[in-house]
Amino acid sequence: MKKLIVFFLTISFLYGEFIKSENILVDNIQNLMWQDNIEVTYTEDITMGNVYCDELVLNGYIDWKLPSIKQLQTLIDQASKENHLEKKFEYFENGKYWSSTPNITNKEHYWYVDFKTAKVSNEDKNSVNYIRCVRDIK
Image (cartoon, rainbow, N blue to C red; front, side):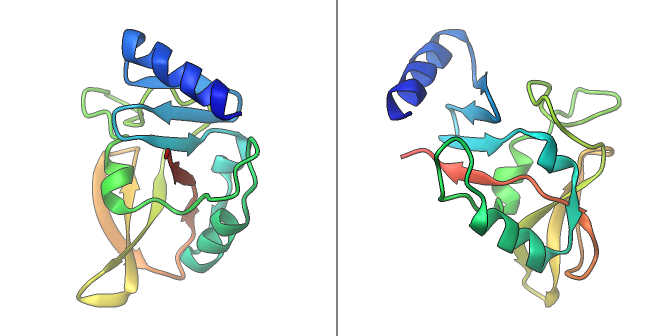
């Protein structure tokens, strides 16, 4: 699997920032691998979202996590008029996706990106939003 990722990374330097493969999207600029399967259309509160990512096994990798707000913001496509998520993702819902970043003034709130509006905000950790896991490429 690592040879396959190296191959995709090599090709991506020639052809662009994102490379799509089965169940994943590789961002070679940020050195991140994003989950891209039907399960990103499910919703959870922040606690269950963290559990889901911690337990995710995808394409042979077990080190998935809920993205930080900075990581999630790298996926915003400001130029889009309807869905503000990077266009190379196959699976998405036009709505709010949780980050692992708590609001420093209110630990009961966590930051999210709303890909419908391209806005970043925070809300109570018991709210239910979409989950998209990420892992660092080493």
